[in-house]
Image (cartoon, rainbow, N blue to C red; front, side):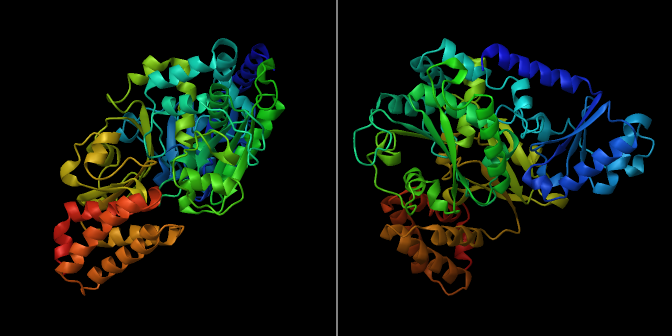
Length: 543
């Protein structure tokens, strides 16, 4: 495979699509599939045949169209109509409208308003292909420029230049910690593998790992990217491998994501077929192979050292750091670990340049962020906004506020590792530092809206119950501390607590936070501490 052949494949695919006058894109991501998308798509295909429109109309399954609470979603090109809550028996009406116009309005599903802030305030970079291409056809990814950036870095850039470009972009890890991506890449690039028994690849062996173990309740950002644009992740990982000098990559994805796993497996097979993965990619000296490792769903395996242990076939327990994975990771080799969204940002940075990317966002938080907007909010779904967008814009404008005119009480960000932001701070810009000042964190991107009816002590207990069950049990502060915190919260909710119990709850929260081994225990008390800070009266009312 060379660049000319790659461009020819892309042109052939574009020519194929242009032969059709109309392209009907039906969302076949997990959310819409649960609403009957497969039947809707099949019925659309049947209706096209019955109408004799096979030569001018194409029906295709695509990834997430983002307005997840209104699935099944169907979008019509080139007129841009997005139908929501499409039922199987409405398929024939949609096809009839293509030739007859909207005469039979009662047979048509409701249309989404593309000028609504839910769409208008988004800036899709990570999600730029989501809902536009068929994730199971590599040709469609190539047709929108796929794998051209990999060719560019292999043929025209040194490894150091790639790392420099990522560093200058200001991209920070989207998994929650916000560590500078370029700095992490540079650290791994400088390391050399020691000749130890653990090192199966020999001196110089390194690894790239994509952390797709998305476990936060209410979060589905990484899952949607993998289901909608898997080749984007493969290309980003290959570029990372070239930059740090690694020839092997692993995608660690939880077993609860069967559709993502299926599409990743197919994408890897297709990339191998076109020699875009494997040996001597684009006839260069660079080799890169990717395998999938399926996790059993342990939340703690989102922590990088526990994840590494799981890939090695061990129990997913975290280990003390240092040494960090950049120095001694998978099988004792230097290992680069980034999450799905981080790798999805690599292609646009290389394509458009670091200056372009760093112009988006805030001074310390560059680029965009993908959020899964859920909870007591009118418009639920997947959004991607520039860093610095305020909480109010996300919840009130894009989310449409609480249904039926209710009031928003708080937004919980960062999952079990985050905290609750009260309504009085909704003008806070969403970036790493601003959220930390409020006692929460960006996390992987979950945003759960709560209304005035929500009991914040119950919310704290819910997350503590989750962390208690997910603790690996290796360190005492987390293993015993989360149990005691849950017991104290239950005591409060049962109206059996006194003032000393409340004081103990706060003190114990800080102890668990400051002495636990890994990020699970260190962040488990965050929902308790943030609700104690901003909603203390609700605790006092239970004494």
